[in-house]
Length: 158
Image (cartoon, one colour):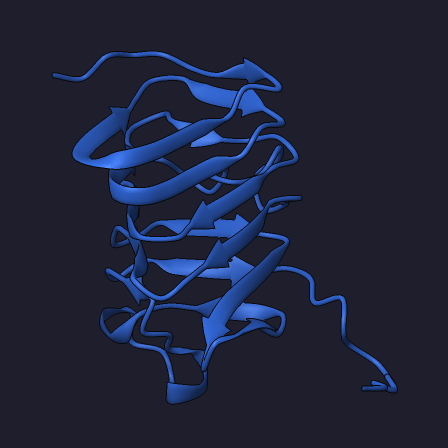
């Protein structure tokens, strides 16, 4: 069953059960976190998580589309202030023809969180080159990363 609903204010959503939760028809204009620990959260036609927020896929699947549009994770089309973290076991699935925008993409690789460079990323099905293909992304759609806080000259001291 699909229930049209939305989250507003500082509300967060954490899915930690082996079920599927589908959001449809209304963008959630919340500053809260969207977190998938297990199960599947689907953003379907007209749905989105469109305010300044954190998106965490610690396990399970976050599915975007079809027919969501480019505002899935941003307040304006083609812009986003969302930070997306994807841990091992988490999958972001983006439907064909969809482009999801995030400000920063942080992927856990070899036990360490790594920022991905500005650019467009996808899974194997997205048809991108190897440098822009990530195993945590699935589907034929694409994830557009708009910002990397580590660009430019940096000195890292350990």
